[in-house]
Structures are given as structure tokens and as C-alpha cells.
Image (cartoon, rainbow, N blue to C red; front, side):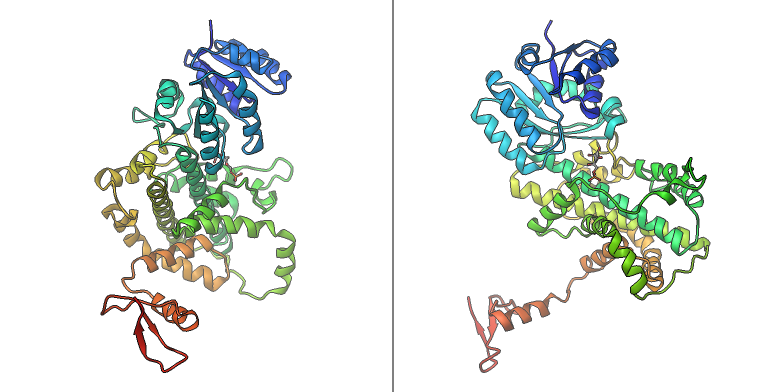
Length: 475
Ligand code: 6PG
């Protein structure tokens, strides 16, 4: 018989996704550009389910029932375009190409139009959860033609992670919406990780604790409001003993973070939308700073600053937990505000509560916390900012004294906390009815006649700064 779905690209993510689908009793055709990979896959996993191994794309396409459903799981960028180009002449009208990699959403928008011109339905689908998620249940963020989604919905729902009986997959929106939401997911993943490492740095530098002790603290934090996959694995990574030195593994890992681009895309997109996205953007900048390893080594010998105390203090540990939680609330508030702005701009009609729902399981940022966000949007679908619902308003109100103490202490002791402190500044800026931008407007009007508005009268005004200093209406 013919296979219901195909997967091309059998690196670990594609292979695991194919195995997950087959484990649900679905017949899967598999293909890889380098045929030996397919042979290996078949000999290793072929017995797990109803797989058809294929060596050529023609053979692959012929093995699929119509409309063909083809998952492409190759490296984001050019490889996706190559696969589409090669598949296109072999496909029939109405066949569906599903790009399940971390593609940049503008590419997805372009590919959707290109495929449509050839009668092919294209879907850009975010898949989160790493290797294990792909195999056992990822969070899936499908974007594209809803009718095409209807053709794969049952398969996606059967392979996704499940939380409280609800699969972690929902049709996100048209065109690039799925990959957009996956991009913001990754941005939030960056912010979450940056907040974790700032807490780790404070516990090391200010409280003077070792990796093992900090691992225990994270383990404990994982039983409260912070409970999440990333907090859980932080405990595990910190507890790991290095086989070579016998000390903590983290102490021998180079302090230079890699990145594949999704965090940067999120930050750039926020700048374009005019959405303050301090948490995620600081996280991207912090990775950039971490990469300047040689410069930092020189600066460490040259630039002045206080030496951190390295002295344990019970109340400090709990202050850091609260600062982490409050900053996390801000980072999510910002990320969701960004998705809302993008939804309006692109006409996607994103349901933000559903995004929180499908992120509760399977994905890297999975957390209890997302239930609170889901509740918030259930009550207020058009919420401007998550900070404004009582649950989060109170959570930050309760944490703010500790949060401020942490920012003060870190600043006094010379420990960099870009995400903690910028999140606090965002919070303090956001809750100001009248900020200081009046002066920016005055300056802009002075040097460029850019005009300003008055608080006491409608209209646009300009002061003739260089002439007689009088004010004129310009509208
Ligand atoms: C996921 C992850 C996954 C990948 C990140 C890593 O949701 O499963 O986000 O997509 O591990 O893209 O990103 P960096 O290499 O940029 O840290």
C-alpha cells in the first residue's frame, strides 16, 4: 500500500519525527539526499513501524498517497529551497509540502507564494522539543492554508505532546504565522536561559556558592512557581560531575554561547514592530558579549570594578528566585505583546491563549507558568500586556522589593545582569503615566523642527528656537 505521509531529511530530528509518526500506526515513506542514510535508517528503525525506504525523490513521491503529504526536515535556509525545487516537478496539484525546520518566517511567506503558483500547498510548521520531543511528543506550531492543515491534523495531533488531555498543536494562522510563533518561542527560550544564567552568576559571584549547591537550589526552585523544563535541566547540568577533572562539568565548559539565529530574528522583528522586547534582546546581546572571549580576557586585566563578595546569605538566594520570576513575567509579557503586534500587522488573527496552551508541553519553554498565561487570555483575549491581569500584577508586586534589592546588589558588586535589570527598567517605564519623552520631543523640535504635541491643546506645534522663540501651530 501507499504511505500516508513522507519525511525527507533523516538527520536526528527528521528521523525521530518519522519514527514518532510510524509509532501511531501511520505508514511513512522516508527519504534522504544521501541514500546511505536512508539505508541506515531502515536497518536501524525499519522494524519499528510501517516504513517505506526510498532512494530517489521520484521513488519517494511515488510511494505516497494523494494528496501527497511531505515533511521536509532539512537545515533552514538554501537546503529548503533546493528540496522544494526538486520536488515541485514531481508533484501534482494540491500536494502538500510541510517545512518543519526552523525557517525564518519571511522565507516561509515567499515559499508559500512560490508553491501556490505551482498549485502546491505549502505549510511552515514550527516544531519544538529537540530530539526527544520529536520522538516522543513535540509542541507543533503549524502555519499555512487551513485546508492543507486539515489533511495532516489527525497525524499532528497524534504525535504531539499532550497536557491535561489537550495535544500541544493548533493551527496557528496562515502563511508565515507558524514559523513566526516558533521564532518567538525560541526568543523566549533565549530570555529564559539568560535569566537562569544571571541567577547562576549571582549565586556564584555574590553568594559564593559552588555549582553543586546551586544545582540543589534550582532543583528546589523547580517545585514552585518557576517549575519548568529549563529550570529542571539547569539543576541536572549543574549537578553533573566531569569525568576528567572530578569537579563540576560546567566549570570546565567554555563561557562562549553559540546561536543559530532565531533569537536575533526575534529581536530584529521587535525593533521593526516598535515593540520593546528588552528581555529577549538583552539575551541575544549577552550571547554576543560571551563570544568576545579574547576581548574579555584583556578587559578583565584593564577595566576597573568592584570585586564580588562571594559570601552566602540565605535571604539573597530567595531574592534571586523572586527577581528571576518577575523578570520572566516581563519577558513573556513582551514576547506575547510582540506576537499580538505581528498578528495585527499581518492579519493573522493569532489566538494568544492557544499559543500558551500548545507551549505547556513538548517544547523547550514548557512550564506550569503557561497555564497562567492561557487563563489570562481566556478571560481577556485582547489583552495589551500580561502584566495587567491580576495574577501577574500581584506576582510582580510581591516580587518587586526582592527584584530591586537584587539589581542594587548586583550593580554594587559589579555583576552584569542585563536581563534582570532591563526587565525592571521596562516595568518601571511601563507603569509611568508620564515619562521623560517630552524632552526628546523638545530636542527633536529644536534641531529638526519635528514638532510636538501639547498636553493642554490638540494639534502639532513648533517653537521657533533659532528665531524669536515663539510657538506656532503647524497643522
Ligand atoms: C526547540 C529549540 C530548537 C533549537 C534552538 C537552539 O524549540 O526545540 O529551540 O529549535 O535547539 O534553535 O537555538 P540556538 O542554537 O540559537 O541556541
